[in-house]
Length: 103
Image 1 (cartoon, rainbow, N blue to C red):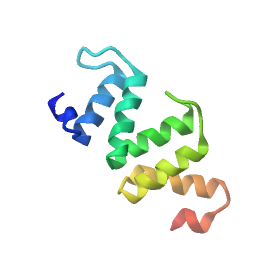
Image 2: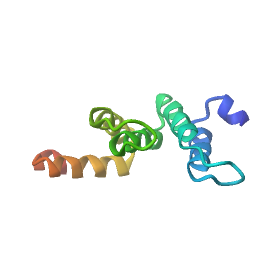
Image 3: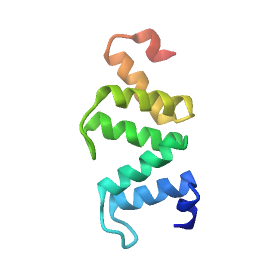
């Protein structure tokens, strides 16, 4: 928790995962998980950006919002998230933008 108070993005993501799955004695709390992922994303953590994007894409923890999902995925991909880049490629391919999908 001390690392979280110092805005350590890895610690924020680790706690978010624990809340997301209800592990290590923590009660499952999707809202708390989203809050922590969002905080880490704001601080530039690419995996957290990816998690926030998935939440908006699937309507999990928040209302479904394709535009917000797209924005978070782009930031995550630019930050080095391979999973975000793969999802963007799939998204572009599904929308007929094959050139962008392979870029």
